[in-house]
Image 1 (cartoon, one colour):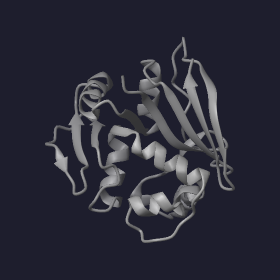
Image 2 (cartoon, rainbow, N blue to C red; image 1 turned 90 degrees about the vertical axis):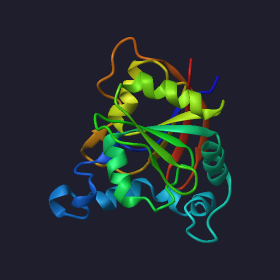
Image 3 (cartoon, helix red, strand yellow; image 1 turned 135 degrees about the vertical axis):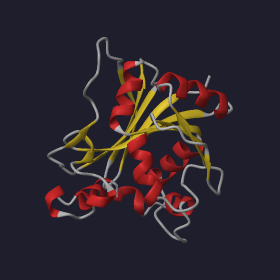
Length: 212
């Protein structure tokens, strides 16, 4: 059976996203310059060769263990699941060829027809909860794995359902001081994980945890 996994960046103080992170707040000082914080969190990925290839940013980029990890993670994905907030920000920021190249199931109360993009990404809007989205993702993934893309509240829902098999966390040496925490709103009994693999890089430490 396909695995369900999380693959995200995390600040050193445990935040997935800085305070005020919406596109309309980009670089506004009253929202503590969230764009710069997000850029620092994700700086490790920008120069990876595979990332540049996937987003068609041109040739070049770094190769090595981090690039290989990124390629392996991306190529294992058969479907993605995300929340409405993540989708709405991406809808105005992603290129026309959205960077997923799989079915993407969006948890939302909004009723909306499927939205197909060039390059194999189709967004489906799921109104009947996380379990339904996961069932649909499993059906369409063709035996490949399912990524819970975010945001934090969506990941928490799947942790509480105890269906997440792996956590892939890129821990960056940046402090947000506020924002959306990853590990909160969790219910007992909480799942237990063990460290499976660590890849060190100058801008982040990449840790894969697998469920015991």
